[in-house]
Amino acid sequence: VPGGFNGGVALIVVGLFAVFWLIQAIYTVQPDERGVELRFGKPRGEVAAPGLHFHLWPIDTVEIVKVTEQQLNVGSRAGANSTAGLMLSGDQNIVNVQFSVLYTVTDPEAYLFNVENPSDTLQQVAESAMREVVGRRPAQDAYRDNRQPIEVDVQSIIQSTLDLYGAGI
Picture (cartoon, rainbow, N blue to C red):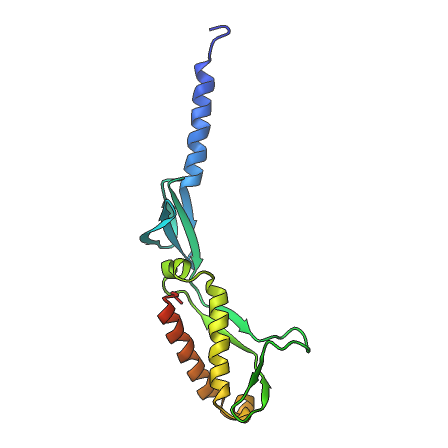
C-alpha cells in the first residue's frame, strides 16, 4: 500500500520488543549466589537457587546475594598513624587490634531487608565485640598468650548480636 502503514514494520517492532522483554525476564543465579525475587519491590518469600530463572519483568525484579564465605577486615592495616584498631585492655594498656571476620549469608532475604547496610553493621558489631572482650582481659592475652578464648568470645558476641538484629549472617 503506497503511503500507508506497512504491517511488516509493525511486526518487526513487536518482535524486537518481545526479544527485549525476554532478555530482561530471564536471569541467571551463579552457584555461589542466591536470588531474592521482588514483586513491586517487596520480597515474594522465594529464594532462587543457582541456575536459569524467569520472572515477570518489570513487575518482578531480582536481588542477587553472594552466599559463600566472605572476609571482612577490622582495624587498620594501611597507615601507621591510624587509630581504628586501638583498644583499651583490662589492665589499662592500649593495644592495636587488627582482625578478620569470616562470614556467610545464611538468609539472603533477611540480609537484604532487615538491616540497612549489612557490611557496615557487621563491621561495627565485630569492632564492638572485640572492644568488649579485650577490655575485660589483660593486654598480654591479646598479644600472644590467650588468643583462642578471645576468638571464641568475640565470635559468640557477634553471632548473638547479628541473630538479634535478624541480619541473615
